[in-house]
Amino acid sequence: MIQTKQYRAVVLRGSSILDRYTLREFFWPFVFCVIGFTVILLSGVLFELIDLFLVKKVPIKTVIKMLIYYLPGIVVMTLPVAALFSTLIGLGRMNEDSEMIIMCSSGLPYWRIMIPVVIAGLIISGVTYVVNEEIVPWTNHEFHKLFRELVYQEDAPLIEENIFFLGGENRYFYINEVNKQLRQLKNVLVYETGPDQFPRMITATSGTYKDHHWILHDGIVQNFDEDGYVSYQTRFETMQIITPDTSDLYFGNQKTSDEMSRKELKEHIDRFQRSGLKVLSFVVDYHLKLALPMASFIFVLFAAPLSLFSKSSKSFGVAVSLVVTLLYYVATPVCRSLAINEVFPPLFAAWLTNGVFALIGIVLLIRADRLH
View 1 (tube, helix red, strand yellow):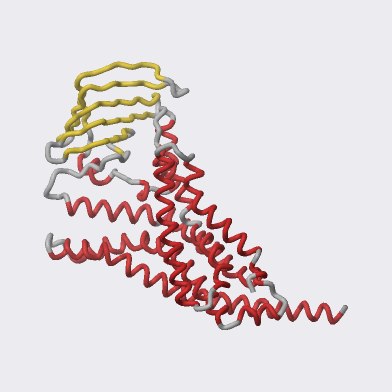
View 2 (view 1 turned 120 degrees about the vertical axis):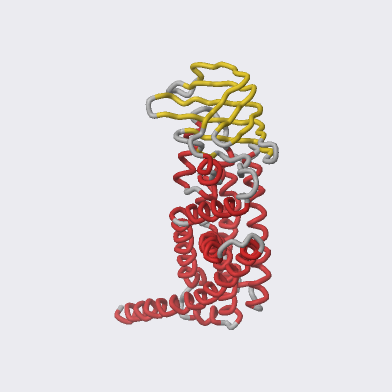
């Protein structure tokens, strides 16, 4: 009995040492991959920023500020790919040098050896989600706001198509098509809310804009009651809307889903769904804001048992990582498009790719002991 307890103590102490060793094999490739992929992805926007500096004579301080704003969004994009690469390369190297077999000889099954790396993937996903919620929306918005102001300061004001944006207090605009040269609009929707009144929706087939004035043509005004039903409706040939601040309207208040946190996006969805509007793109993006940060954990769960197939850690790891990354980041927008076109439910579409890779990873993890 005493010998059994001593043996368990030795195994437990040995397990903690092996856990630290396994994490070290994962950690340094992960750091190098994050730095490398960040530099590669930054190179694209860097050319545009250099063009602003050289051609448009934008001050270097502004260019550096834009680069700093752009950086957090790039870093969170690299984390899942870096987790995939480092898992395949780190564990693949241990398998290639027969270290996995030596570890198993101490009484540890393969799935137990992989636990610290899987936990590391879960932590990376958690950090990614927090950064995506608290930092990235704000930095993305500041970057795009500066970029719009610099690029379009000599042209007509930039109005993004197919985006809800704030246009004055409690008023939201949605524009399907914009002709910036003629300042003409097509398929305009205006959604107005107030603290002491039920929402009102204005739709128009066309319109024009200049300074603080929006002129809408051939439209309908609908008032809604507390249950979301139309309580009043009337048609109009021409309607004028005056906005309080053009610069804020055009540059400061337009936000894509990348510039909103998950909480802010949910508020937009609830606001428009109460009036019966379909905002499927927002709904899918809302679920993706949780699904995409989980990619680090999913990739590690998938790659950890897969690394046991490696006979050449670097070439195998690089090849599989490239293929998996390509499949994941092609399948995700395809699923998003299918959800927007009502082929898949939004929640199912957002998590489908994660689910497939997670299922494969779990099956491989269960069968890991049979792979050698």
